[in-house]
Image (tube, rainbow, N blue to C red):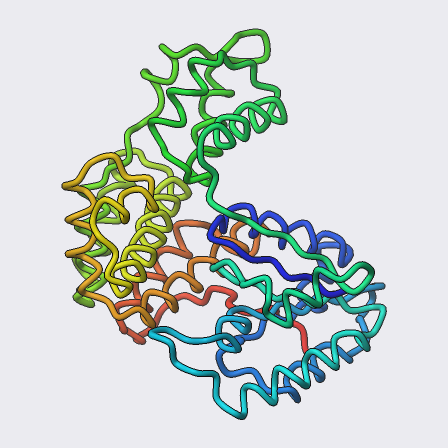
Length: 346
């Protein structure tokens, strides 16, 4: 089966990937039957080799390709797709309908794909594939998501508390999910979450600390970034919560950088990013200058990989972030190993 998962809500797309991995089989064979490929360097031979392989001790195998559609689309500042990439696109479009029945191929994109793109059109065809879009949620969809997520966790929550939670965290679903878990533990099975509980328990995002940490990453100052990260842990912040804040910040930076290169005005940028304060948007733009668009895209793809690894139990959040900071700052000296790609040989 062919899937196209696209859109900036990487929390939901990571959950979708985790669900697809569970379909592969027992946990002990998932890595053996999963390949994650970098779409920026993918060749047709790489793709067919991974997809045509038979599953090992399972009925299915999963092949995930990240960033391929972005490569096979008009690039930044109107860069045309190369002749070799056009040829690759033609080959892939012809190959996908011939996928082995035992293989699920997922193209994963952090940006929305244009409906006229051949790989979008193929996924949208009835019987040819499955298309799932993950846009950033805004009111009232965001509040509806919070209410539904709370019900799924067995949490009773007042409408005003839902509204306040949305205001406190914005549309970062990963952060919202963490805060709902805290509220659920606090309220217990028989109680209802009220707006006072949200005020009491939901921490405002420590934007200043995260800005400082991302500044350090932009300057490749690993010691400062590591000190700030472990300082947050020392304050009692959960590693998964800190990861949520870092992922949120890099998502905003990537969007801000893209809009800035399109000469978007500050009010438009604030509207697109859901920012309520001008000083936050101004600071975000200043920080984005520390990174190229390509580097931000690479960092964000790495955060997506970490997110999936955490959700599938392959790595602990604190270890993943230690390695992430080390890698972003370019220090290759003795570091712990975090799974980066599906481990099984095809």
